[in-house]
Length: 349
Image (cartoon, rainbow, N blue to C red):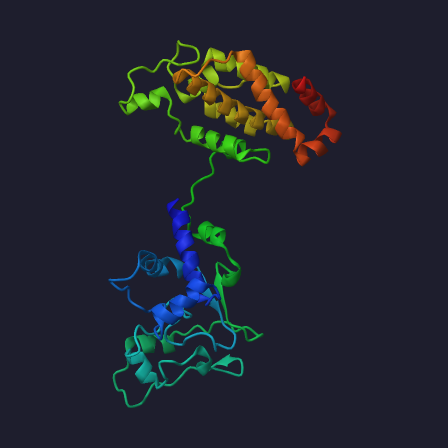
């Protein structure tokens, strides 16, 4: 969520830099920036929260923003980070400006002639040239110019005017190794409500009694379903006699059996199942099963009634068949896999 929040703020930043026609960027240019430059403006002490966040995230945005240079007319020579992701000058009084003899309002087109670069010569009246100016002139790597002459700002190689918050988030987010249960949660048949619940389960974030006990919230860890075991994730959804009876009947409808005695080992088996189509149906069936088992557990915890295992099984199968009846993918699969179609027909009975 922190990465997504930063992506939203950087999206505002991109709109300001690309001079979007939206109301807020136009207001920023006319009222907040006025004649100042976005990349070199200091952070005011009395600005709004969002504007302060936008300015602070300039450093992050510069890691992914690049300039595709055409004529250079729309890029500031001194105050846009077109050269190696940094600005040549910080203020209008920077020595590099006066020593080059070019105006502070000069655009990049002032050093581009007939589609090729022509760097300025240092002012001979200055005997002690600024180190940044010398570094720029001596190590200039001549960025490739667009033959069409159009200046474009790119975000990670895509035109910044065409990107959305998702593109920004995908660039800045913290990445980790793929977890083995990923496909068992975020598959094509998923329903958001069920998938999100299962995602919390895989991260160990459901409020099982063993977790609440660690926090000192409850004194007992006795499972609400079988009244005999210690309520952990694996016990509640795999090992519990009540849950295991329901799960074995569900997988049995697809000619499958329970493999492993932990929750993650079961998901890993379904992901690696040789028959991909049958495995996908089993993954979705297990996803619905998790949701219903958790509802039944909560009903018993809060004294809202008790479902027997057969009635719970019936409710899971109804949800399963209802989802498949609206799936275009399963409609096509049923024509080529009559064995799976017969399994689902049996379920619907």
